[in-house]
Length: 517
Ligand code: XMP
Image (cartoon, rainbow, N blue to C red):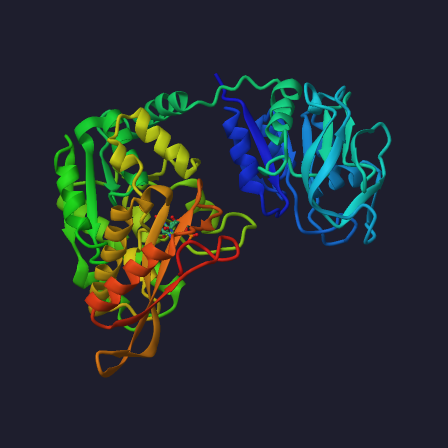
């Protein structure tokens, strides 16, 4: 039976991933696709509904992103959000105009009045707070559309053509600030698109195992790139269920792991009933990284080198070109590494395998590539992985290389490892680590003057980073108590030679990213 799917057409809005999450929280499978996706492709996908996202442009500008008008003739329900709503109005013959200072332009929480006879607002109270962020407004409704919500400043906050199942909301139902936002998305999915809610983790798990079995075949083997992080560990469990001991897990220790981490991973996986190999490749990676300072260049070198190590291991273990390579790539890796129109923020290491590495295998398996981090954790729980593994904080594939700003050397890596270890120990001891989703130290390439004892120092500045987040696509800096920060700072400066100043990173994502490089 074909799984129901919703397509989210991406017009460049900042909350697009959040829309995808909200849809999946309703147990409905969805995928984000570029607004340039040809109509034919959309038709082939047979979605039960389409959502147009927000975006930074004005629909009346010539160059603003638009979709083929014929999309409205597919007979598929459409919900437009913010820019997406204005696009529906515009393409259907309505008018969208720039709002004036005090009229119709709205940013932030806004009391909005709903027409509860509209399918979108069924079962809701007559009004609620919504999150608005628009400088344009629909000054004239298109023919056949009726008004479904308004606010004090904006006459047309939602529009509907119930007969054609076309809806638009000027506000953002996907953000937490919108009261009843989840209900509105739920109504669109279940009352309008007749979703069954068939996307569950159990279903995904069983389906993926059977798909993997089919793809790998009766005697195919798989070499899994195992980093010991959540994603590749969950994938190891999934593949072990699918193909048993035809799986070989290769853990490449590039010498840029956190303190003790390589040994811990080896100890944990050696207990599992699978073929586990640790490759100590510190020299190999550090040699390649010598004199390299550009972040994207570092990522490329490391991504490629991983690939070359896999090639060597594949040869050693008799993995042939009829066998597969598997990676624990997840959705944010794909999105942030640049997909379609999305700008490349940073290429995640698992997106950087050289073509000759890919060609050496029958294919590259990435069965988690549509999941968000918290979905991967849930899958890990379903597969019976121990909680400490499932809840581990992420550690990027390139490791400390992207937490050492400037050139990476063994000496700097050792310095950072010690400092990072102190930070982790102190956060664990204060219990503060339970409130954080990721935390680590970053060795900047800035040196400053200090005084220790009676002497002058001219040493490195270390930054502490700690964030709270659910999906790592957005994150807030953590409000760690000063006392804890103080203890970490005093210990690091006293105990780690070469560091004489500590700063705390108080930027969120966006505009920053979690990692510094
Ligand atoms: P950023 O820095 O992009 O990080 O906000 C988001 C999350 O992704 C992790 N990260 C990576 N994970 N390979 C990975 O497996 C990578 O190349 C990579 N780069 C960043 C980062 O630690 C954070 O959890």
